[in-house]
Amino acid sequence: MKIHLDHANEKMNKRIEKLEQHFVTIRTGRANPNQLSEITVDYYGTATPLNQIASIQVVEGRTLVIKPYDSSILKAMEHAINAANLGMNPSNDGALIRISVPPLTEQTRKELTKEVAKFAEESKIDLRNIRRDINDAIKKDDTLTEDLEKEALDKVQKLTDEHIKKIDAIVAAKDKEIMTV
Image (cartoon, rainbow, N blue to C red; front, side):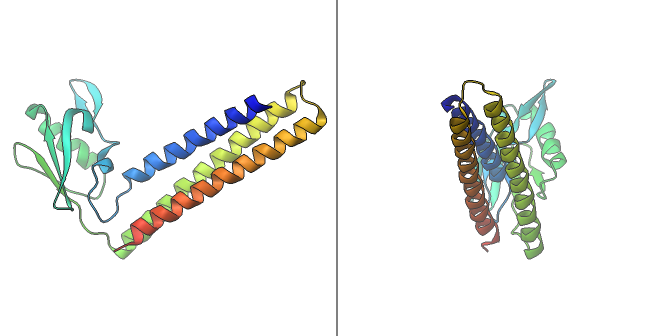
């Protein structure tokens, strides 16, 4: 029984980590190097994360400065940033790329909160699918008595509820961050 619960907890925690990693990339009104964490650049035929081939810094709160370790890939980096469709325009000065992070409009903030809610709901669905799979494994476990099986199913439900509350708290915090002017 403990094995099933530990397995469920591990999978649910990984799903919450994935949600948090995705939320880091959603922009707020401030510049954040993590906004570029999912961008990959074609570097000598290999898709390489931008943060592995360049330093990314925040300057003056609203500007990201990207300085490549190899200046020959500046154009490829600029193209990759444009292709990512982040709503920010990079400017290339020959040595580095500057991205001015524009302030969010009210409409953009609302769209971002909808995106946050959509991804959170997908995460909750994943948690429920994990719960279903673990419940099926518990029901198929012949070593458990009927009482132990019921107890294990109850614990899996409580675990699922706890993780859904964590998601709700993460979403509330991200919504607050997005809506703060």
